[in-house]
Image (cartoon, rainbow, N blue to C red):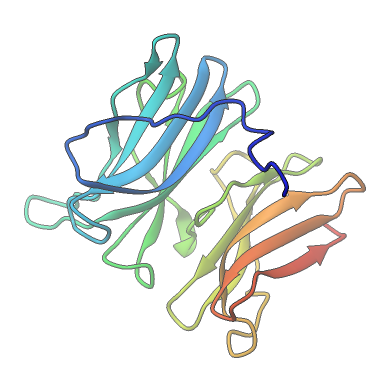
Amino acid sequence: PINWKKGIVEEQFLYDTASFPSCHAGTLAETPEGLAAAFFGGTYERHPDVCIYISRKTETGWTAPVEAANGIQNDTLRYPTWNPVLYQIPEGDLLLFYKVGPKPSEWWGMLKRSSDNGHTWSEAELLPNGNIGPVKNKPVLLDDGTLLCPSSTEGNGWLVHFESTGDWGRTWERSEGINNPSVHSIIQPSILKHPNGDLQILCRSRNSVLVTSWSSDK
């Protein structure tokens, strides 16, 4: 049998106890100061108390989870947060993409920035024009400086699309959906960069398979 653990450098829990009973959708980024991790935590997925938490790896271990974002709208309205995605800009800010809303078919994309490796965060920015950002898995930096974000929607069937930004999230372009949901019902693509420059995605599906697609033109 294949020893699939051979490539694992280290294996550990981020925390032993926390103020919330449930967490989900972890994401990692390598900052100049070390690894940072984010996830959403709360009573249970979809509960309005679900927030985005950050832990940082230090010489003495992982820091206790600290709230980085929540879904509070006003004094009487609060929504859950969802699916954080960390991205470290080369020689720049650490970006935190996440979603806010009552459910995946109605959520919207948000962005925060950290200039100190995840210790503190900017005010939340609403992504424009209904953009979601990377829906669950990491964006990929193309050779021309474009940050390509794999995304998807669930409101009218499971549909994969892409969002891209050339200025680290200040302006955006968005593609049409690439699949027919009645044929391939897919969400949450991951992007793989191949040595020859081709891009490949792997998608979660309702078709009892992983679904893939390729691009040779960025």
